[in-house]
Each structure stands twice: as structure tokens, then as C-alpha cells.
Image (tube, rainbow, N blue to C red; front, side):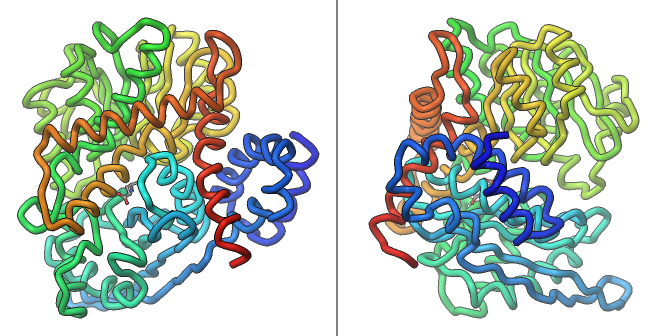
Amino acid sequence: MDENVKTFMEKVIEKNPGEKEFHQAVQEVSESIMPFIEKNPKYKKAKILERLVEPERAVTFRVAWVDDKGEIQVNRGYRIEFSSAIGPYKGGLRFHPSVNLSILKFLGFEQIFKNSLTGLPMGGGKGGSDFNPRGKSDMEIMRFCQSFMMELFRHIGPNTDVPAGDIGVGGREIGYLFGMYKKLRNEFTGVLTGKGINWGGSLIRPEATGFGGVYFASEMLKLKNDSFKGKTVALSGFGNVAWGSAIKINELGGKVVTLSGPDGCIYDKDGIKAEKIEYMLEMRASNNDRVEDYAKKFGVPFYAGKRPWDVKCDIAMPCATQNELDLNDAKTLIKNGCILVAEVSNMGCTIDAAKLLTEKIMYAPGKAVNAGGVAVSGLEMSQNSMRLNWTIEEVDKQLHQIMKNIHDASVRYGRVSKDKVDYIKGANIAGFVKVADAMLDQGIV
Ligand code: GLU
């Protein structure tokens, strides 16, 4: 590791003890940014990176609610308002038992660069709770969301902080959260994105992360005069992100052969298409958090406790959660002839896996590949401000263009040689410059 990065990381670790996911995200960014800052002393002098790793504000709060048996439950809620340099804080809410300060700080930190890459005026934030939606009834989900919003409402607003969905938070949860916000504030505003289509949501928002990821990967392939046509693709996850990716991959002539859940993975050699993609929505809605049901329904093999990375594929797209693809998985994928890994989940690959994939094949990080979700959230905010709804074609066209722009900006800053691009470096620097310049303009705050 570079000496400057090492010294910087020692301070970050000392100040944020035990937050290993946050350390990982900061290390990945500083390894790309440090050499760039050395060449641009204005950023160094203004201590931009030192300021960026400190959230502007982080709130944690008690979420007490009553379950169906009449028992009182207590969870912890969070909102990390990381950076408002280029717009209101913007980023999702994650409801998952693994949620803690480290995970939300890593996600909020990544969100700063991701949102900047979209070219839209959005700062970075993230929030959520250690609430586990698995097995909860609809009424329990509603009561939890209402209690969560009873505190969150005082920290957010359409010009302050605009949350959205993430793992465990989809259209239903956004509905319950919005209903409570509206009741408390007596205002109908675009305070959340991912809203229902009849009450301020944007068309294509549910599909946006997956569609955007496939658009991005298509641009990577295009650099090699290649495309998704005829490619076998391994996906992980089975939620909203994997669903959107599967639809678009099928449309472009690729074949999706795997999905995974906390219980294991499935292998469908005939391809996950048509009604099988529809079934993914049913699995998500069931709140069971398992993919074995797919194997039972369609008679395909299920591998308990396994991830899908030892399947032979041309392209791998992690769509589940952080650190779901490690160095050994990367080696197996390369050995099996995989040519491209596009991370649609946030920080889906460990640092060593991402480095190896960049060196040997093509790899792009989540903050670039999955920016389509928050990009369409940004378009939802624009439509809300104008009190207008755009058509599917209009939103999809803008999403496609944004993903192409992110790809081109990553290539501009990440080009290593004629046929090699370091997308980690490219995305980090491209995302950083806009935020850093805004911070220089706005003084020491
Ligand atoms: N949770 C998504 C992400 O990781 C979307 C955030 C949003 O739409 O604000 O980018």
C-alpha cells in the first residue's frame, strides 16, 4: 500500500474503530484518489479527503413497535447524512439484521461518489435499521415503518434529505413510510423516491438499478466490440436488482443461469426468462428470503449454502450484498473463462478480488455499475418538482444516457492502456472531482 494511503488509513481506523466495511470502502477510494490529490495540491491543501470521510451528520434512534403477538420489539434506526456538497443527501434505507453503523457508513460514503457520477444534483446519505423483514406479516412491516418514520421525519425533507429503498425496502415499505411522513408533516412532497406510480413515483424506477447495470456492462463489452448476445450470465441475489438485470439481459440476447439467496443458489441451464422472471417478484413478496422455492417450482438444482461463482459463465453480475465475491471466487471465475464482472451490488467484491479481476479480465465497481437506481431516483425528484410524469421511453432514454456518461467518465480517468481500463480508479476520480470542487467553492464547512 502507498505510504500516504497507509498513514491516512491508520487515522481513519483509529477514529472509527471496528468499522471494517467502512474502512474497506475508504481504503478502496483513497488508493485511487491519493495519487490524484498529490498531483492536484489544491485538494490536498483543503483537506478534502479528510473532510469527506467524516459524515456531516449521523443520527441513530430507537424504533419501538408492537408485533402481532402484542409483544414490544425494539430496533435501532439510523440515518447517515454524509455529504451535501452537490445536493440534498440522497440514498436508500436498508432493513436487514446485519445493519450497523459500519455498513451504513460504507454505503453512505460510496453513495457520495455514485450520486456525483450520475451528473444529477444529489449529495450522499444512507440509513436503515437492523429490523429483519423475514417472516414478518404485512401489518408488522407497516407498524415498523410507521414507528421508524415517527423519528426519521424530523431529519429529512425534499430539499434536505431524500431516502429511498435498498435491501429489505421496496415499494411497499416506501408506501408505509411515505404515508406516515405525510401524516406528520401534512405535506405531499417528493421526500422519498421509489414511490408508487399513482402517487409521485417514476416509471422504470423499480427496473432502474438492473437496467442501468446491464447498460453499463454493455458499454464495457462495446469497448471490445462485443455484446450480451449469446452470453451466459451468472447473477447472485433474487431481489429487485437481480430481477431488473435479468429482464434486460434477456432483452439483449443473453442467458441468465443462476440466482442466489441466504439459503444457497440455483442453476437453471435453460435460462431464467419469461414467467420465471415474474416468479422472482413472488419470491420477494413472500418475505421468506430464500431461493430454494425457485428450484422446487421449476425443477432445477439447488445448492444449499453455495454462491453461484463456480458455475461456468461469460459474465458475472453480483446483485446481492457487500463482499459476496472474494479472491477465490474471482480465481474460479477467471479459470472458467469469465470475461467480465460488473458489480451491481454495493461493494460486492472484496478489494483483492476486484484488483485481480481488473488485472486479468474486465471489472467495474458498484458505485458506477449500480448508479442507475439512484439516477432514476434523481429523475423522480425532477418529475416531482415539476409535478409532471415522464413516459417509460423518456425515463429509459435518460437512464441509458446517464449510464453511458458514467462509463465514458470512468474510461476517461481510468484508461491504463489502449485496451485496458481501471474502472475502480476511473469511477472514484470522476466521482470525486465534482464533489471536491464544490467543497472548494463552498469554503470550510
Ligand atoms: N439504494 C440504492 C443505491 O444503493 C438507491 C438509492 C436511491 O435511490 O436513493 O444506490
